[in-house]
Image (cartoon, rainbow, N blue to C red):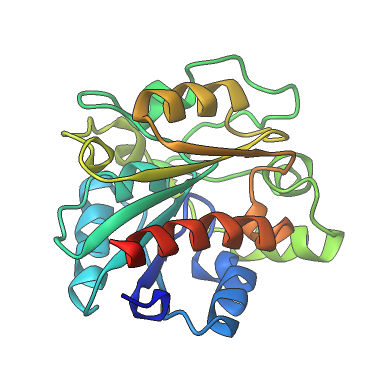
Length: 231
């Protein structure tokens, strides 16, 4: 199979939307890879999994499924038969019976990590200054400003619903560990990647390398694509 026949589906995490993948999409498209940025409502883990399943149902052929941050829990919960490999980008990978919150709060937070709490509507927003301080500290001021402007809140049920048997138990997985991550402790990322038996690539990048180091993200995705193409 040619790598060009392998599709890539990118899944955004909390406080983001599909535009956070713009640079990754551009580089994959230059390589003639069919790529889709799947939208999540961020209303509950179950809702997000259902939304991703609907996106996957529209795609013919094998898929490398890529999740950033919170979306790691989402990509690990789908059951679409066309998914052949998983790529975790500074992502959360709860095991069966765990919640996103369980793994997010597993290790000590970075001093720059924002304090998070739901508002009166049960939605968790990221403080505006946290985009430059912790979410993407390697971004330019303009990039951080755009990320703050487009942020979408995440609802409490997204992080409080336990997952079932994760797909990484059954499919090959890659894990990009972000060594400069101020949102998800890099030690937590290494713990999850080892538990998954994932193919680990560790880089000195921040929490959102899709924006600040897209070529690094594309390199890991490309490795997964080539593996799927080789059968």
